Length: 387
Image 1 (cartoon, rainbow, N blue to C red):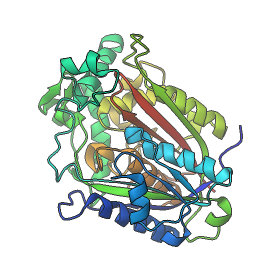
Image 2 (tube, rainbow, N blue to C red):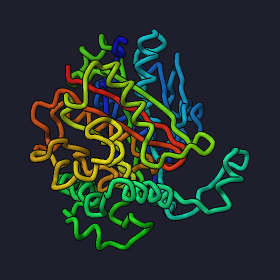
Image 3 (tube, helix red, strand yellow):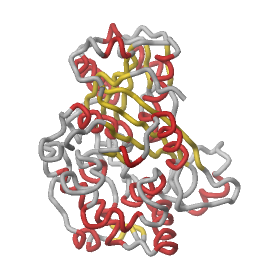
């Protein structure tokens, strides 16, 4: 399978973590403008636009941004949408449907007082799952906690091992001036924080933040004439996992399938990856991805992440060197966009010097989106390469 013919030429993450004085369309536009400036392009160059459910109307945003489009995609896959969009944009560029694709994300959950994770999910009443799940008051955090509890039961994974994921994120966030939580924490800090849903503590959960981000994906012939180092999309995969009418597996995510497809297309293995951007809505989310993507065997995730193995400069698999969703930013309650942005920074050599991975030539991004890993969700995986 040939690799996608596309490159990421522009990135931008809004520095704000609380934006009470901006509308969601304004945040989308600010992020888009920043990514285009980073690439050395303008709105007039964009002929493909990709967005998801956070956009207040995809067609409306195209009009708001003044875009003249040949290709449009409003695929909704929760937090996985933006990693998935990069793969879709690469396919569209390879097919000649567009040459400069813009992907945007923005939202204001913090300003709007959203208590993500601890309130009952809002269901689409026409959705077929409502009659089976809504009566039980499922929340995001208890659906993820079920997976963490099951992993503990099957493999002996401890709260202390999960805590190491937060510890690694905090070591990285201390170097990010925009991170919401910059204080370095210890394993004891994490397990001593209030229990939210057994076995997940408060510090096992991501931050709630306003903000946004954008990506510009272009044809390679365009990328090589722009100002930034060329970052090539080498492999992409996507997958959906659900309960299959009762065939429940709480400890495997769709990353197992999306990662396999991305690695096959890229022609590389997990051992080749120098840096990983992994979805971190909760610590258990990251641990399961590490197993499902093949960085370790199923059940060995707790031991793999322990003792600082995810910390840049000392660990075997540096991850989320901006602090990730656990410490820095989870804009619009969707973490996929920032995962791609930080991976591109690493490949360009533009991450903070304290966390920059030496000779970072190959990076992985994975995102999870949808209801929860315990029932139905999507996963998208990218393999990115510095040309």
